[in-house]
Amino acid sequence: MSHHDLAHRALRYPAEQFRHYSCLYHGVGLCDEAPYIYFPESWQVWGYDGVIEPGMVLCVESYVGQTDGGPGVKIEEQVLITQTGHEVLTRYPFEDRLSV
Image 1 (cartoon, rainbow, N blue to C red):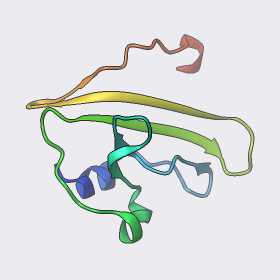
Image 2 (cartoon, rainbow, N blue to C red):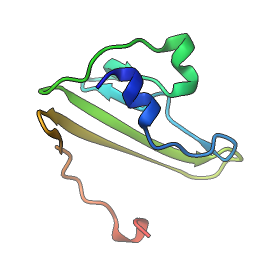
Image 3 (cartoon, rainbow, N blue to C red):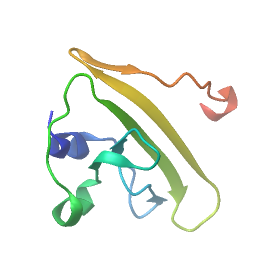
Image 4 (cartoon, one colour):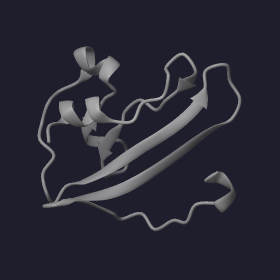
């Protein structure tokens, strides 16, 4: 799958209600490493295409906060891309009360 296709198929929240992180996916490292896969609305300015291949590890960024302020939630999952899909590498448990 290409970076472009991955970005444009991602789950989206209404922009008028929610803020988000600066990217959807990025590589593993001390900072947001390559590949840096942007949101569709940033694609024309910052996006670059590439291919997601087996053996790559991607960080899946999930930050959601309301545009009018208040608390937000940021969760990052690391996934290994495999021949048949992906394998979640993150083993940190979530709070049951947050999954409602």
